[in-house]
Length: 274
Image 1 (cartoon, rainbow, N blue to C red):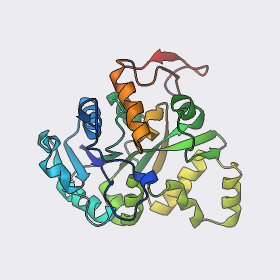
Image 2 (cartoon, one colour):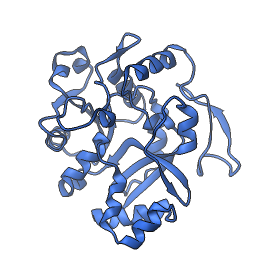
Image 3 (tube, helix red, strand yellow):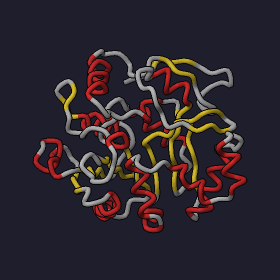
């Protein structure tokens, strides 16, 4: 069974706004940001349960009556995560994504799930930096890292097994908030590997294997063709941008090039569907 947690960490103490952004209840074109994420999830993958891990304001909002359960974030993300996991019960895998990323579509979630191996304890989406910068030229700074395969930007999308959360509570809490860069794990290894990493001389696959060793289970990184998975609303300017995007009636990403496994080596272009 596949379940999902949508996270709104905007009121969690100790998290900088650049890591969290605005509340998912902020409206754009007459709808709260979180409603776009919910619609994308519910239209795509067959979810058994959907939980909102969010501030108390959600409980009295109409969004809480749309077939979802609201679990308070609590004093920290770790306690909120475990409360959400208890609500989800016996789910085999759990999809996690932020509430303030309204440009996401069902096709983006479906693509990620298609290439995330069923046996992985943790799957995480990354996007090529050139695609992110082409899609969002108004955003000056992105957390990017060079690998042998190219420069990658981490997304906010992850898929994990509940057993992993039991073993690594604080780690997963940081990952789902964006406050913790998943690549911080590299500091657990020797200076030689860390130097090669900083110089961009390690492969993404090598890092994935190292992370799997540390977490005690198979992990994978999915190179997604969708920059929207890395974009969250952090400012009034971002709100104005997504209002134009969502109100235009145009696809949210125009045309893009296939990654390996999605088309030919030369790349195939197609218009994204909403």
